[in-house]
Image (tube, rainbow, N blue to C red; front, side):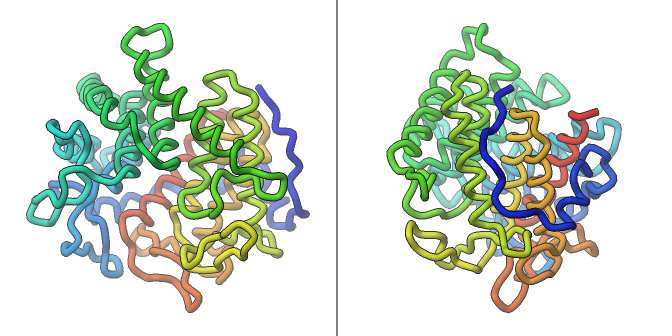
Length: 378
């Protein structure tokens, strides 16, 4: 395994020191709480938004959330094979299949409550997130029908996602293709288009870092915005598969930097807010902080721990997860123990008390990924 050559900046707090290797021992990871996921799901799929903990039907559904819900359902089914939960892998996969627009060769995104599609083709990010979820389904489904349907959708959609313009949509696609290729490796002829697209998008991500990064700004853009750690995550897993040490090293370096610029003096995670982001040469926006960012960091850090074999990355994943449970700038819980949901973010004056799909799935996926990592150590 390639070991990261980057020192962690700053001294860990006593809380961080005492939490070392807790993931390995296992007692710190809370159980996966599916109540609000179930509450937010009807016979069509998962609703986008909530008014407090009540589903908000006015905004209907989107493929972004149903793709993430599919990943959560697949993770849960893999971890707890004999548990009946009321969460249906097929329901979320059904939404993705229905969203595929054959004539456009791409997925729709937004659907109203009365099941009317509101667009012919969804955003680039929604295309990439859907490929990510389908790849996970191919690699983790517990039955052939689910796996074959997901694989068919993914391969049919490849031409439509081969020209995505944005770095994040490319990163989501890389993550999905990495999962797909676990099931259909390099020796399989049918995997060649997926390998080619994975390699091209990973190389384009790496080139963006090489073209834009400097010693004091190891980032691929001039502003750090949303789902940032997904870019590092994609570099790490693709670099590992492609045997690209330079790609892996850049992934470690940029992930380490993301952690450092979002580390409060007290040691906790202080997320770059979406009310201004972090511009090059500028100041990090303190609010509004989004659960999506904490989850992206948790997932990327666990990938870094797996690839490097260095448990310090798992410690960082745990530190980032604690943002949900009160170790944040306001010292408040975003996870809602009464419902199983997650608040929609941190504002200067407190939490956004709505418990929408994106936030709830950010928390739930973080928990499930921590459990998956712990299981991998057994």
